[in-house]
Image (cartoon, rainbow, N blue to C red):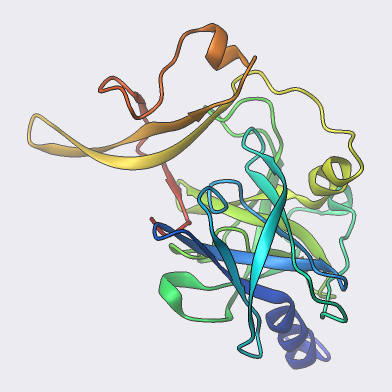
Length: 246
């Protein structure tokens, strides 16, 4: 499908996408949503300090964690820089099945990689609670987490987070907008997880290791434990894998 001005749209997205390095263990992507240094990424990327950002032109800067919502897997970072190339957040409620989308990120350390696909659905995903997800057939890999998912005009409709059943999942842009406005609603589970391989009867399955329990959440009330406990594997989930680099 030929899109007028696609090269320019893609380059603008690449320049607004950053490389996020959090401590020694987390690598991922982020997107500049305000020219005064406001960046959105995934909460499972922005876990450890220090958090360093690399811009498209090679500049590096230390970021401050402004907000982190592990329930929705969203974090907001701030840089002491200005006049940065920012994206426009679109209305994710206007997405339609079959619509073309563009994903940009840093998979496996490759800077500014781009892939395209179409929207499969927007809604709930089994085993992931009541939260809505954008589901698209874009190719994601470790390092894509936190990068933008944009429509054909280059406006960001979501933040890429994980792969489920071979389909990429992204946090809708309207969820981001509500969080930035302080209008987030409570979620029922309240955990941050990462995938892990489990050998069961000589077969490899995927489980979810609990990294963090959100205070006063349903998980906390249910006495779930984090990875410091040997029983911290929550469940087998062969169709899920996150796209952050561990």
